[in-house]
Length: 229
Ligand SMILES: Nc1nc2c(ncn2[C@@H]2O[C@H](COP(=O)(O)OP(=O)(O)OP(=O)(O)O)[C@@H](O)[C@H]2O)c(=O)[nH]1
Ligand SMILES: [Mg+2]
Image (cartoon, rainbow, N blue to C red):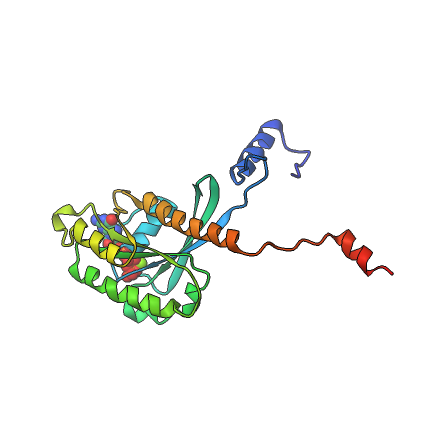
C-alpha cells in the first residue's frame, strides 16, 4: 500500500482499517476475492421492488410512489459463508409502458431474480405467474441457471392482507422456489431475502467453478525454453 509521508499515524491506521474491510482471508491467509452476484427485481407495478432495494442499499423508506422508468441498479455488500459478496441488484419497471426499455440484455449474466408482489393486492399476486412465465421465455436460450425467490412485499400491512402466507408459500413451492415476506417500511426480512438469494446464487457459482475443467497454467520460463532452439 502506498502511504504518503505527509500522513500521521492515526490517518495510516484509518486507511489500513478501511482497506482491511474489503478483504477476507482463507485458512492459509490467502485473500478471498469478492464475488459479484447479479440480481434482478421483477414484478408488477407498485409491488414494492424499489422500496425493497432502497431499504437494502440505503436503509431508507419513502411512502411516496415514484414509478421506476426503465432500469436502475444499486450495490449491496455482504459476507455469505465467510465469502465477500457484492450483490449488484437491478431494479426494473413494473409498468408495462416502461418495460419496452428493458431488453433481454439485462438478463445476461444474471444469477438471481427477486420476483416481488404486494400481499395486499390480489391482482399483483395473480400477475406473478405471468411474470414468471415471461421471464422463463426470455432467458430460455441464454444457458443461464438463474435462481428465483418469491417475495411478498408490505407484510406490515397485515389488516389489508389479501394473500395468505400459506397460499403464496404453496404457489412458490409449485414453481420450485422459496417464499419470504418483507416489509421495506419496517425493515423486516429485507436483508434476510438478499442473504437467502445470495446464498443460492453463490452455491451455484461455486458448483460451476468446481465443475469447470482446470485452467492450464504455463509458466513464462517454460514457454521461453520450449521456443528456444
Ligand atoms: N406499508 C408499506 N408500503 C410499502 C412497502 N414497500 C413499498 N411500499 C409502498 O408501495 C408503493 C410502491 O412501492 P415501489 O417500491 O415504488 O413499487 P415498485 O414495485 O418499485 O413499482 P414500479 O417501479 O412501478 O414497478 C410506494 O408508495 C411505497 O411507499 C412496505 O413494505 N410497506
Ligand atoms: Mg420501482
